[in-house]
Length: 218
Image (cartoon, rainbow, N blue to C red; front, side):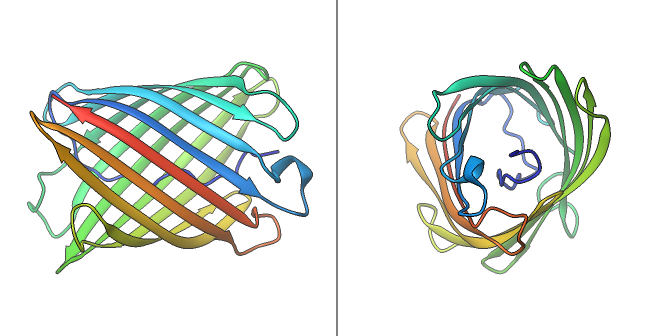
């Protein structure tokens, strides 16, 4: 029911070599027309590492909680980000993201390749993600596409307001997001994001509340 209807995050193209990252992110949907999505939660828990100046790898455990049911681990995912250009080298900064996911209950697989671009205008940063996804397994075999975009104002490092857009198979949504980071001692940082994405079509969830917390250290 939730496939193709969930917001996630907008990725930037940058890699920090030798950085370790522990991440939790979640999305909660509200939809009065679809009972399965009214109070649905999806959680991502991950550990990642910057293997070089251009490659960052991450492994995820993905769990879901349907209304009236217990939390259940649903899938595992491998992710690799490739920074293609140095920051500021060209008019825009470029990268790619590759993902491979297996869902246990349906014996379903998903692979995706995403192009990432980011550009700065004064104190504004625009970031775009365009992905091609292929799903195969017991349930179905199909290609999908996905677009994510963010316009962010760099007010202070601890608080940056933004607007995000998501477009996927059964999702078209836009809404406000807040982003921030707290630098700790000895090369440690906590990064957070929270946003409320409003559905623009009947197929989209009415509201999607997304959260992200990352603990980064060297």
